Image (cartoon, rainbow, N blue to C red; front, top):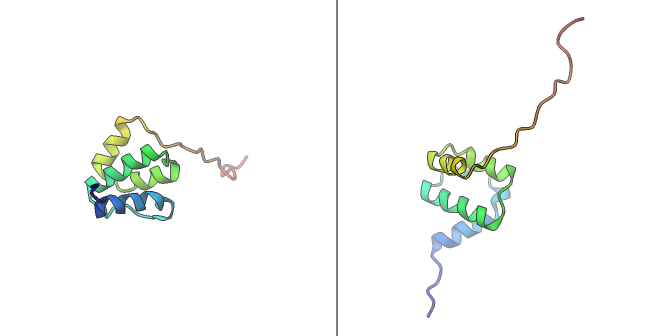
Length: 87
């Protein structure tokens, strides 16, 4: 007989499905955040917005995992809209 999944596992799976609508992951404990990040990678759901969501937590373990996997945020250049110098 198979054992049912734990409530924690179901919660992480639900969070993975709803990542686009989550605005803050910082209240999550480190071990849950790491598990959610790894499941996000495995599911192929890591995009710029989701990466920024994980980076915004500021948690050292998550940031070092991102760095060790050589995942980088894309930097969009900001062009000036007007010239402040007078000619």
